[in-house]
Image (cartoon, rainbow, N blue to C red; front, top):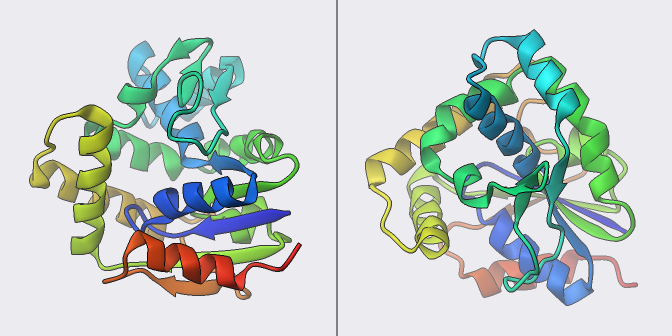
Length: 222
């Protein structure tokens, strides 16, 4: 079974998706990590973010490993490139502008479709922006999370502070959310929008537990 959870940055899909995957015993596939891997490697190699040919060649050469364990105590790194742990670098909010630019490139989006699908073989909770519309249009159940920007910034701050062990300035997070929102909404290929058959979940003002219960209640019995 494939459970698709789409939504903008900071809408709560990663936290809730992890809990849902744990409860179901499913893999957790965060497709955004693939774009982060390309961004990190492009910066590492000094490739311009508008060099489509160079970025495409880089992607062809990469071995991207995304950890699909939903456990917070997962073995191994969250994200590795050619065996190199890049988990912290990939979560750095300062890469947001470059990440937004790369995510808008049609050639990159098309090239990442199959790797994302391969990562979600079997039963999986799949997180992203175009899971229900492009990656798994025939997913068994589709959710689309929404939340206002201010609440999404606050959630992103808590998420990063836990991962990095240090406070992240609000200005940096606001810039990250804004850059990703604009990229998601304005790109010509696979813009952020709910699938016609997606269940809309408004997460504003709700606890993680409340959203988790709402999602679990809407899942087909199996």
